[in-house]
Amino acid sequence: LATGLANAAGAFFGAMPAGGGTTQTAVNRLAGACTQLSALVTAGSALVTMLLLAPLIELMPEATLAAVVIVYSIGLIKPAEFRAILEVRRMEFIWAIVAFVGVVLLGTLQGMLIAITVSLASLLYQQVNCPVYVLGRMPGTNVFRPLSDEHPDDETFPGLLLVRLEGRIFFANAEQVADQIRPLIADAQPSVLVLDLSGVPDLEYTALKTLTAAERRQSRQNVSIWLVGLTPRVSAVVEQSSLGEALGSDRVFFNLELAVAKYQETLGTTPRA
Image (cartoon, rainbow, N blue to C red; front, side):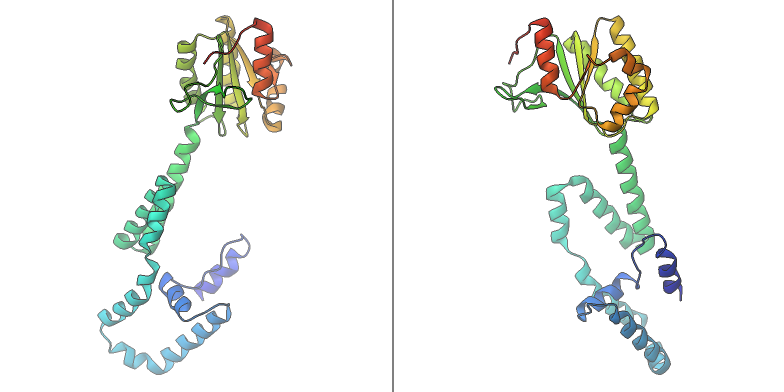
């Protein structure tokens, strides 16, 4: 009755239908169940068992019943899946280990709740910590990529700092992003700071205020801020603000190649490796 009511309520929210515990799922799978008809067969078998076999099952030790559950559940534990996750994503491997340990020590429901809590906290951490990259240009191309020791020949431009942001920028990470950019400006001492926002799907109002204040502050220090690759959503936010008025159309570009070309045309710089 409880499962039926849960499924009826879940239908209004797009929830997956529930049919019992994981051990019941394992029994169904090993028995070759392929359709929802298996649920009716299971329900009928359970009813017959309760009516006819309950007195006999009552005499069985609980250890015997536990052994039956363990035999059918052991196939659900697949170490190879843990190795496959670890080879691709270490964070998801940690989630899997937390879920496994939580279920073993605390029970299925409590273990899954702990795993969900840890995964949500991790996702929140990723959202708050917006990646910030200093870019260079691959020689002889229009490809811009993060500067690294693997590509020592990538071109940079005297007086021009190219920075790429990734992820949604909002009240929780706006100051953190600004704190990452400040030392980059202090080290490079540029006359133009280009912010590549092509990887930013949304710019929340608090983040917009932070960017507007940064533009005014850097302008007083003779550093001009240019924006590149604005998505339609971000572009609409910027255009309707005082930041859009300050930048005008001369400091907003479709891509990094156009911004670099404009900078070289204006200041007559040449790339350096």
